[in-house]
Image (tube, rainbow, N blue to C red; front, side, top):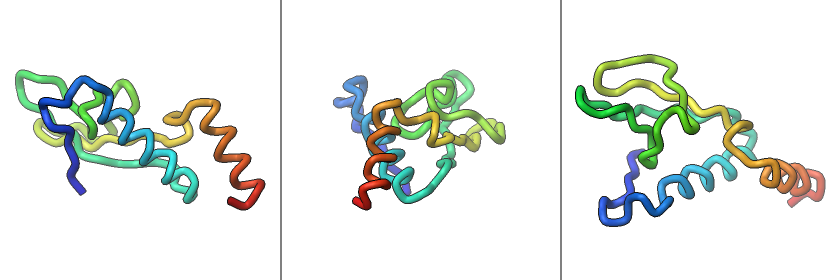
Length: 94
């Protein structure tokens, strides 16, 4: 799946919100990590899905000159509050 935020909306945090929403939904389903391909050109740094720099959430697991493979461990992607919400929902059976 390929998704991007239109350039006129970039910088508003939409990519970050999309990634966080996806991480939250996948964590509820028991998924532990997301892997994706970044985009890199010779002049610009690697960008992860949503335009996030890999150091923010995604880490490079297989370098490549154009499309490095990136990985985000989901347990580190959620905030403490979101972790508590997920745990409560599991306990309550929602």
